[in-house]
Image 1: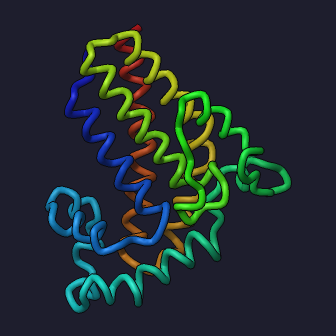
Image 2: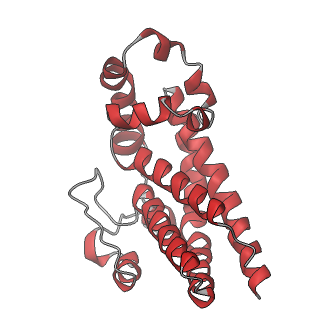
Length: 211
């Protein structure tokens, strides 16, 4: 297998990071995890140099700027749901009626809608968390030297990225970057967009190598 554990670990870390950023408001623990890792902080270059970050504590940043931006982006002005972009009537298909629920159920992925700031399982944060779960399962198959399992999971990831995330998330993320009022969410949108595009290419390459 050409795939390496380091590559899988990097994918797990990035999906965890961007899904958390888009699921609900940041907390001090999340901000601390960015600040304490030079590697992660470098993924947010504008945030790294953001004047307000140097001027205020994380608590003030969160309450005065970041929470306001999250509300603006995810709850008020933009619609972070796949069905809004893919249905002709732009209606959000919420709860168990959403076609994604069948896929999530088949792979034992539990969506706790009430714990996150989401109303439907096709929220961008939930879809990114699903990719995180698939990458974590891939790591287990890789560590068990289960080549069939690795290939199967890569196929599921390829299909999910192609048929779901890449079908609508780039448009949302471009709008998110444009509408963001803080460096954190501006950089987060750019990071997520670049990562899911390159990750799809990576998955396709790995499947070619396994063929």
